[in-house]
Length: 389
Ligand SMILES: Cc1ncc(COP(=O)(O)O)c(C=O)c1O
Image (cartoon, rainbow, N blue to C red; front, side, top):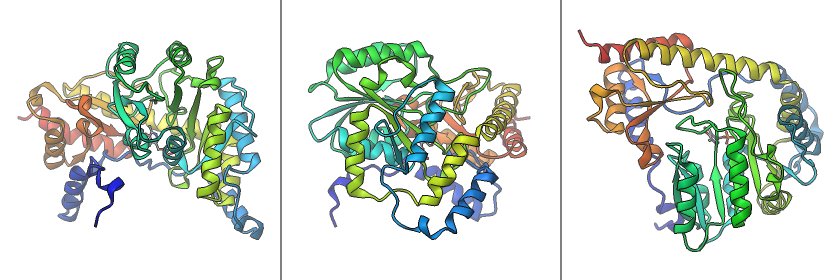
């Protein structure tokens, strides 16, 4: 059978390592899985309690609102005010989505069509490429691997015809963990305004940062809402991955376009989940702090342990990932080969950098989704490869 839109999708990049991991586990190996970025930290107990309570009320069993209930949108606007000093009109500038991933996908359906061009980060979290691609747009990649982002952006923009309609960014960045400051967004907003292009900023790691670094919101730039939107999600900071609660916030016309599209597609998230999410947003700051402390401990256990074994590189200041250049003694290996080697010899699953795009070659990504003890076990396994007797 022929499924034209889907058949053009390449196999999901990480399948090969994942299949090997499953085979190793079936063979009885204790594999430490730092591959897939699937958060392992439990959602806050008081949020689960609220879900239980709200789910017993039959009024909450009906269709909800596809935009999200007003009090949830208000809770996001309140969080943006508290955290970023950004004012959002919850009626026009906020919409609830089924996590950031769905939000991005349908937003791009509203923004582009065949014949349009989208600029995306390289390397890239896959949906940043496939959301515009599935909507029919052409993709141009903008490297985020060095300090010359704006030079790359300018070149990608002027080399593209027709002129790009949308720029997708995401900082703190998955997989490279690149972080930016507010000045970066000031330049980006000025760039977008000058060239009349939409900005879509995936802010999935808004709430995961270390060493005093506070990720800025795109919307902190005065006038950013004239050209762009941001995706915010409860997945990482609030450790609510499975709940699928995200938001698109900012430009009212873009939010309105997505709301119109979604009104055809869905009736909104199960209302008890939305009600519990209000509590998470309003009362979850301590939980977010605990989540940060947990990822910080894991980051340090991994990076310090690898550094002691001679595999040294800068520690990330944001995200729940560690992006590591392949160590010198294995630099002859490509990232997929090195990831398979780590799995076979150290029983540690990681994501090969090439899976995120060509500029990811030469790196592997560790997701900090196992506990400190398991991460130390992973370090011991890797150290034995780096320091053979
Ligand atoms: C950059 C980025 N955006 C979005 C997501 C997914 O977010 P959500 O669970 O809200 O769809 C992830 C998850 O790994 C991510 O890394």
